[in-house]
Each structure stands twice: as structure tokens, then as C-alpha cells.
Image: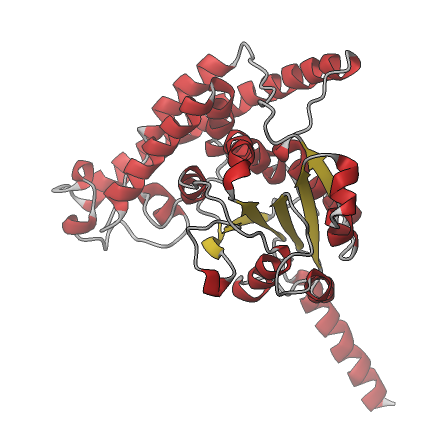
Length: 372
């Protein structure tokens, strides 16, 4: 009897301890596989125009009130400039949360005619990337292109089975006629892993919506940039990359630049602890009192620890103020855009493109898995 009571007590204590442990944050992982053969310039341009919109859509997801971590990976395939021994495939970027690097690599893509082996690039992304083993994490592959999905030495159906066994959804985006995409197995390439099939006109110009809030958001972004301080050996290079990607976004369109500014205002999403002093200290990666002057930005050199801390606190507060200003305007901007897109839809205007396809697929699966 005593043994039974003791066992019950131990089980009860174990349950209490288990419930007391905080639930780890969920993760959203998205690998995008681009056909970069000659006919795909429009696809790449659409992706450049939509990457920050996709980031913002994904970053608005929550799971049990927590914002999930977000990681993206990039591959290109079907490009004659790539090695034939590797089936004309290149991993451009492994799964990462470094949003500036994602933008940089995307803007560097160039098209060149080649052979498009969908099964092979899917297989390589499955084997190369550090996919989460947590069944509650959302794991998505998006492959975009044209030509037959069944080309090449690797059977896409076998890769679909592997993806399904690991809880990874393969979503296909055919650049061309919907029925033609079905005939060329792009729909089957998605269905075999319970993913979604889309088709787009990759040569169509993106239907951006200008809003009354864009100018102020981008002005606040300029001020936000002034709160970033690169440290260490990569600090200056990464700070320069931040500015370059602002320029790349603005060169595409004011709306693209605004989407990037909104993404940068999200503290849990746009985090740069590997090079920014404030993020590094806030995330426990660095201690301002222990850092040498040689690894500090100029503004912090030659100061006492107290003076460094005061400057750090002032800049952190300034950053939070600009993040808050952008966030408030972003809510009004989103409402304005939704209303405008609704009007366009009612008038029969087609608004589907690479970005809307990715967003639709992610949101559909996220809701099914309990994300809000």
C-alpha cells in the first residue's frame, strides 16, 4: 500500500514538474527552390518584390501565443552555369534567420538556360538542410518553375515519400497555364506530400498597392538604422549589407521597401545578434563590460563600462520607439491594402503571383496545424 502511494506521489510530482517547464517556441522552416533557366527572369523579379511580404505574413503567425522562429533556405536549379555533375543544382543559402542575407542572395540570382530536374533539387534540399524533427513545426518546400516535373535522374515520387515521412510539405508553383502544369505533373508533385499546387504568370508585373503610410514608415526606418552598431570582425560588413538591402528593396518599388521596413521593426523576427551590439547583449551573446575596445564600434571606444551602458540603454530605447512607430503605421497600412485588394478582386483583377502563392500555402497549413 505504501509503495503504491509513493509511486502515485512520484508520478504526481513528475507531472507538476513537466507542466511547469515552458513549452519551446515553434519553428517555421521554408525552403524555396527556384528554376533559374533563361525563361525565369520574371519569377525571380516577383520573388524579389515579394520576399518581405512573405516574411511579414509568416512572422504574424503565433502558436499558443508564442511567435515561432522563422528560417528560410534558397536553392537554384536548371541553370547552365551550375555543375552538370550535381544535376545543375546549387544550395544558395542554408536554413537561416538572417533576413538581410536572404535578401542579398536572392537579389544576386541570375538566369541561364539549363535542364530542370525537380526531383533532384527536392532530394538535395531534403538531405542538405537541417530540418526540424519536431512534428509541430511547420516545414515547407516551395519549388517554382516550368517544364516537366518528372525530368531528370531522380524520381520526384520517391522524394515525396521521404518528405511525407518527415512532415515536410512540398508545394509547387508552375509558371504557366494551370492545365499544362497538371499535364506536366506539377500538381502530382504537390499532392504526393499533401502540399498545394499553384500556377502563376511569372512575367506579370506585381500589383503593388501604394499607401499614405509608406513615406513615414521608410523615414522611421532610416532613423531605426542609426540604432544599429556593428561589432567584431563582421560588424561593419553586416551593417553595410543592411544598408545595401534597403537600397535593393527601394530599387524594386516603394512598397517593397516599406515591407522590408515593417519586417525590420519586428524585434523577434529581425534579430542580428551575430553583428549588432544591442541584439547581441539583449540575447546574452555578449557582455558590454567584458568586450575589448578593439571589437567595439567607434562610438563605444574609450568609455567606462557605465558610460557604455548608458549609451547602450539610450540607443535601445530609441530603437524601440522607432519600432513602435513603424508597427502602429503598419497596422493602418495593412488595413488600407486589404481594402484596396478587395476592390481589385471585385473588379475581376487577377492578383496571384509568386508571393501570394507562398503565403496561401503557408497560411493554409499553419491553420491546420493549430497556428493562429
